[in-house]
Length: 416
Ligand SMILES: [Zn+2]
Image (cartoon, rainbow, N blue to C red; front, side, top):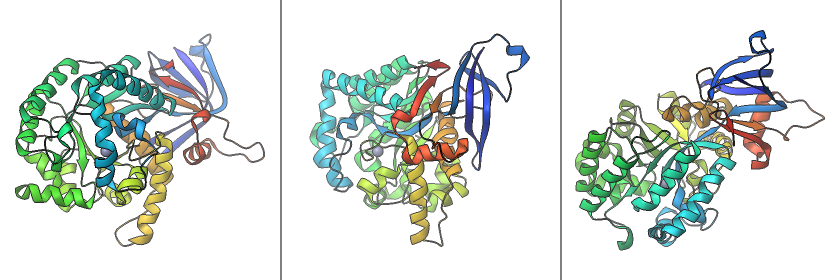
């Protein structure tokens, strides 16, 4: 048994964030056993790691991030999606055919995720199975909970990134076979988005998904262009989300739809039917998409919502900053379209970035008993002249925080 002392903050439910001041958290085999306001007798003699006045919070979950775009973050932020992909992102993604380049980037990416307090992530690779496998292996080695996908795309993309259906499916299947039995970092099917995937490719992926019972991540109704183009190409499917349902890709495991900004009724109905996640990526949507998710209304409607950094549409790897921006964007959305929207609270946004998002990976994202002790210690952000509660310090960290305010990081109870 190990004990950690400090102020403890986590989400219990969508609307309830709880704080335990000056308390002890007991951890056994990397899992939270309980929280105690005073050191119980039964733990007399156990080692205590004292974090003083600092705040212990759950580590973050990033539900949408493109590892290969890591070198591109914070550049070409003044264009919109179509030009951004074709002029910058696609040429960069082509470079992951070079193993050395891939290794250098992915080593840095994984370290930087941890530096920013993200211990769980749903990650896009590129079409290159070998490079994407390296990324997955790094995350498994660190013990991070991850879903990592080799991307599939076979049309409407530059020739150098267009796959042939047969080899795309073959490589995807061997990628799954190789990593399915991993402990924490697992493979997931990753068709880029409907306009870049042929019917044959999606149907083949659907078969693989059913055979291996593995989930899917993609971009859903991301931009007006993407939403309209998807339905134009697949008129019989009725909606962007319907394309994946018809291909048999839903219902085999986790379903993750990034952005979900322009959903029709059908998109919402289908996503809910399969217990899927819509991922809000606040920075990316203002940088390259120019649309805002109806976060409050969708959440009220029962849609599961997680947060994503969407590197490199987003420039910032910290999910804590996406928590504050999702509050900001929901207020703008409400201001411009007051009838259909409501703004979300800090409690709700924090829950999306921790417990709700973490649920995708298992018992992570909270500090309740039974959850993995994947935690961050936040300090150096309070004022000496004005007392803040631990929840207020957590909120301030989400608005002003930098990696230097994360004083310690724990993954399954181990300090890293
Ligand atoms: Zn994306």
